[in-house]
Image (cartoon, rainbow, N blue to C red; front, side):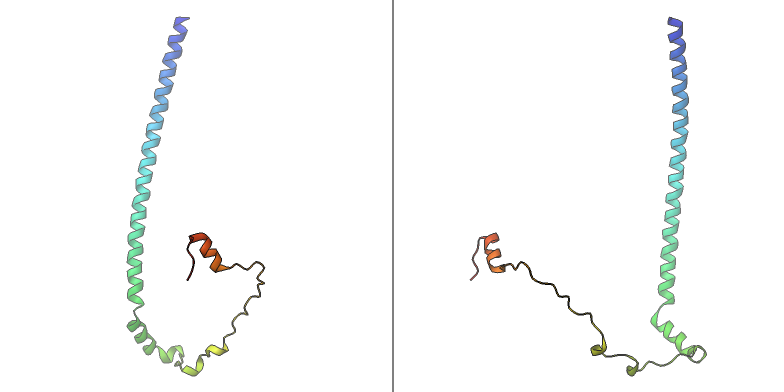
Amino acid sequence: MRTFFYILTTLSVIGLAFWAYRENYATQAALSETNALRQDIREAHERLAVLRAEWAYLNRPDRLRDLAEINFDRMGLLELHPEQFGYVDQVAYPPDPLVPITNPVDVINLTEETTGEARP
């Protein structure tokens, strides 16, 4: 019986060693994948910063104005005049909602009750 326990213990130790070996390599693989992903994120942030700088450079108002003047006739652009815009009184604002006041609150008494101070 003692021999059976020795064999069982030896097999358990070998099984646990194999499991620990696999877990070690799985952990190392996960760490290297995490590092690779972090590097990709850093590179993406750098590319994004460069693209934002290029976008800001290309959208300079003086550059866009020059491009509009150069391509004015070819693109069939029209000059802007004040008559092309509407007036404020022509804007259709939505009507005020009709919300009935069902439970009015006396604000003066409410502040006196919460603070304990009377209003002058």
